Length: 517
Image 1 (cartoon, rainbow, N blue to C red):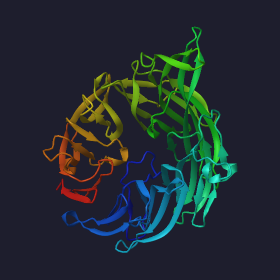
Image 2 (image 1 turned 90 degrees about the vertical axis):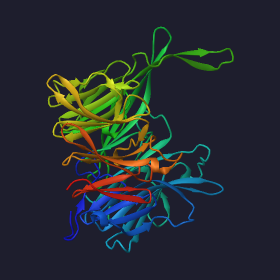
Image 3 (image 1 turned 120 degrees about the horizontal axis):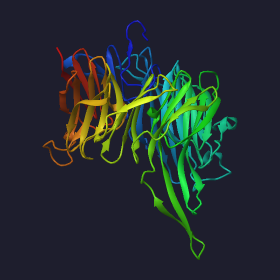
Image 4 (image 1 turned 135 degrees about the vertical axis):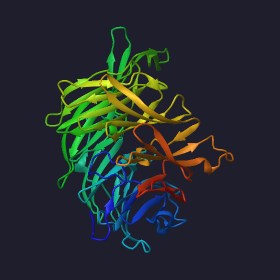
């Protein structure tokens, strides 16, 4: 990954090794690239003397569209940045949502030049970069108020590669077995260098989470399965249909689909390993009784929503047959829901919770005929992210004893269960739940992230309550190495450790702190 003078260095804690995810920060061995909303900023790597040496404003001031969801990729030769953003364009008659990819030449950081552009109508869901291609996933929702069957743009996603809009190919549109809404998930493969479209697939109703493995894209679609009971009530179970397609060839190919009970929380709840898709779901059921009134109206009286009806389950699916080969049903205490999952080859970690207490589970998946697991028992708080910290330790980032507290906790597996090693906790503090905003350095056992410290003595609504914290796990404790003011929402703050120094970036703000000699 080098051109002989500058090499690419990955920062983001990607879910799958070698499958790069877009982020607000990337680096080479000489520069740090940070996307400060609509401005790409390039910094030197020079310890206390670090400076911003170049920048590029993505949209000119006064162009009109409203933008959000900023992310970008840095090419392996460190010469091209590809920005992915969402923007909204409004006029008197119609409002349109677009996903916009913009390619920038950054070979000279002091003179950044725009190269190419790609647009599609819809909402940005996710993207990946692998083997010279960008996988772009978007959602297109048909607006019934604007629906006009004489105007294809109102009910079919539109692509613009620079020569005007055209519709996605009709032969690539697939409907699931359980069609429940008028939405598309559009999966596209683009050439990383030119942004030329290489392939397209579109699914109706698939509007939930997406997981991308080394060879496959997995799309999830949640629907309700209703069962009529003998007493006249109806039990409604959440179900998830998972559809799989390959993306390695010239076109996307549908491999198959499978349905599991429950709903999938996020991409981290799915993992492909040695031909098996492993999926954790929250299983739940709601019992209702429909009542018909004299005027013909029907209402549903909810009899039971959370009285032992929710739990957590694991399903293992053979991708050669799309059959469930084994499962572990309702392994958590009654009424628990999955808060976070992390897979690590033949191991999986799961945090479930009810209100402000939880267990954390360690699963051994080395033998699918004999899956075993251990847990911590009930502890205060819960983790919205679980991260393998290496050396046999698991990191949890989430809430402490109440909704206003922030907690980082380290766990380890023992012969008879799972124990908490240490915690770092702040009262009256908030944090980002976006896993990309966390800096995870397993080699140096460092954890960096932005927080909102509401105890900090500043003026009301002051942006100075935004801070960046760097923690070091020394094998015994979580030691705070850095705690500095850093402007900007914690979800957009980023940091990276390089040769004894921590480089931290926020909204029009950056800090450099020496942490090790």
